[in-house]
Length: 281
Image (cartoon, rainbow, N blue to C red; front, side, top):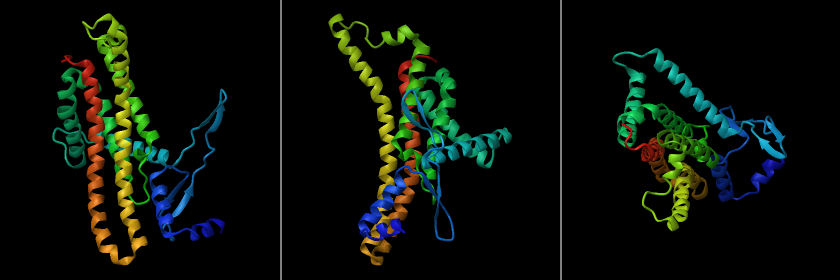
């Protein structure tokens, strides 16, 4: 009753803002269809909440974590189904999955890192692409939530990409050779410390760019789409035809952006690996 009264006391603009923030931020409620349009399922924020060496650690399953579990489950089911239906000439869903895998291999991995290295890292690139794609598209399903609109999630993906990139470099050059490439051959000794700092900044800038690019693009699209819906409540029913038209356009655009951002993240990861394994064919 207190929450309803507080909500009723808010202006329409504040209620629209709360609706947008509720959709794009993480939380401990997951709304599911019910007789009252939507009924929230409350997740336990203290399920895996503990202290470790004086640090407060909370690994409980939030809304975005739940979306990632669902995405991982769907991908696992997809992999099992596709593997069971392997054929010389795949059909239907298997054919669509094969088309994406071949595109990642032939148009992303091989051109950026060479055929030999592409065979070694294609599994990781495909996993990254499909996981980001499914998470992106799940946010467009009613009652869904976009896990990739959470900067903690995109940071986790970027950190994993960073570790794979560094592993690829050390695997190709060796540990000492990898750190030795931070100072290009022929650089004067007095300039070497500056070059090391510059190269380290470049190494750290790559995962940062991956993280922020994916997060910003996914959040921005949802904010625009939800703002169009909110205009109906702010300006009245007369604006419904305009917001409906723009809303459908933005929804289709968001589907395209979901595919595009998965492609960009995968392509940049492959490119960063290729910069370290160039010449490995």
